[in-house]
Image 1 (cartoon, rainbow, N blue to C red):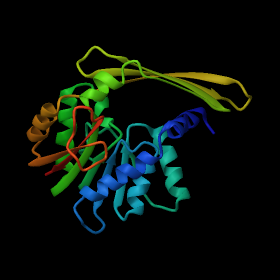
Image 2 (cartoon, rainbow, N blue to C red):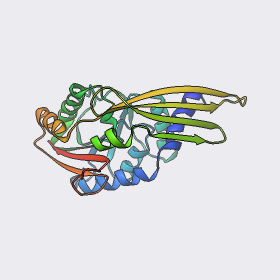
Image 3 (cartoon, one colour):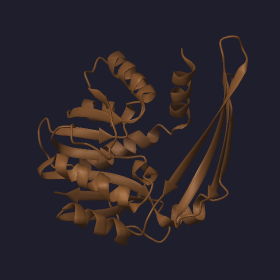
Amino acid sequence: MENYQKFAAVYDSIMDDSLYDLWTDFSLRHFPKKKHAKLLELACGTGIQSIRFKQAGFDVTGLDLSEDMLDLARKRAKSAHLSIPFVQGNMLDLSQAGKYDLVTCYSDSICYMADEVEVGDVFKQVYNCLNEDGVFIFDVHSTYQIDTVFPGYSYHENAEDFAMVWDTYEDEAPHSVVHELTFFLQDEDGRFTRYDEVHEERTYEVLTYDILLEQAGFKSFKLYADFEDKEPTETSRRWFFVCQK
């Protein structure tokens, strides 16, 4: 297996699998009931969520920036005997993506946008590729999670063939953090290669998301927290927006 694929696979091994069930359940509760609805999953990564949606009866397309992740997604769909198109693309330009009834963007992928202009651009792109009355669901870190929970976070994992160190620090922009990840992956000859990644995430007040969604044209949205159908509290960590075109 190529190193880069190993590397993408490491993401899966550190990701809490039960979250995919939670994303799926939340989605199914909030999607309009429509047979064989066309669904676009943005930032689909290695395809686990796309497969859950396909198994739930949706006509799914997965889109991601990373060709390495998509290679794994294609293999995963193939071994599950499912036909899912996985497309390399950027959610800042969905002009070639087609039309959908539903669009999702989970795992706080919106928080990777550089600034609120980019967030607004994504919302406009999504709006344009939704059918009339289409629904867009995304989640982001709450300001509490970014400002209070993350800074100083540290996670270390040691497995047979890989080790990982993950540290999170406060960043310069308001409500932003930087995650510094270092992986040590074992090569065929038993030696370890080091990989460093920096992930910057940023969130905004609910009002900012509200304004950006409105500017993109969405007629309404509902706000929930932490995978539950409840309004956020001061200490909610993940906000969910269910938006209607």
